[in-house]
Image 1 (cartoon, rainbow, N blue to C red):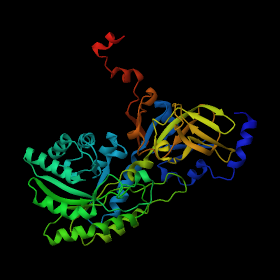
Image 2 (cartoon, rainbow, N blue to C red):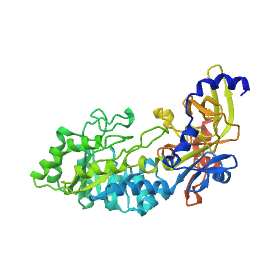
Image 3 (tube, rainbow, N blue to C red):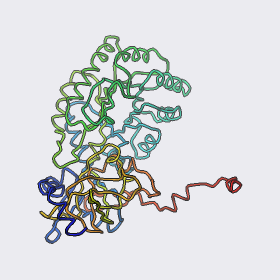
Length: 455
């Protein structure tokens, strides 16, 4: 971009604190460190500069901090030390085997929503006794696998699913552990796509039919009612929506107790949020735990929680390299080699992700620009109208908050191989999932013998 172009787009950006300066005040919140590099500072994770990782593995790439993820779990466990609590990590947030193994070794269980996630959890060493199986649609073979693995509970979401589970249990000669997922019709005040506890969503059993269905479980051969569960949404920053859900579930719990039906656990779901922007609110974990411990103190059952994003979200970054610039009458564009197939959240949710140069400059002129990828879609952007220090071609940017719902939602759109994953711990890093080659993608496809006859 010419100096004239820079001048025309910097004035309106000067009154905004840019991401790189805001992050400098609270890098640990995002799983980062700042290391001196001459007159500048550079981003590092667990003692390893991002620059060193990029030199070894290229861009784009996902980079995860083992210490941040472990620290998030330990903080949550400490907050609930006052009562029996099982933390079941929601695998859908990030299903990388090293992360599952790390969390499992630290005592976490798993919240799964598919047969594939069941296999991942078991492969990572998480036993079936610490796995709960959620999800609105489960195939018969998935139910069979879950029962065979001895999962802690199958979270049933409809009368039809309950009948199917009973049939599979009888066929296998086992008793299925059932937890009914109730829909408490609680609005968590989050993005509409993330609000799963409202009556208009596909999730859960309506409250008005919950007790009748629970009593039906108790009467059905091959089933045992082990719990009640709910999950109302994501990016929740305090305990109140969980307390509201508990209040809605209380009458069902009390009615079951009067019918001499005891429960093993109460699962209040997940959804704890993280800060995506420097000024975002941070969950007060100690207060959150204290409020839920106090609210459930009279319940003689285990509490189960299903955090996902909270544990891993700010434990990961997507590193991407600037490959070009562009400007038209409306916008300035920074073109990077990462794209919506690597991180779809901005396109899907209009989600904000903080973006910081890997080598952090000081107080320099800012330019308002869109940070976009090379994919052939207008939705292929990481940020719009974002004030940033104008980067040079070849500079590396770090897109923060990519430990959750980045790799797990990635695709090979535009025949772009999925980026590699890197795990960092105590000054060491390793590629835990290599970058695939285009030739490997093509090799997966098969030509039917009759294709040539169609020409």
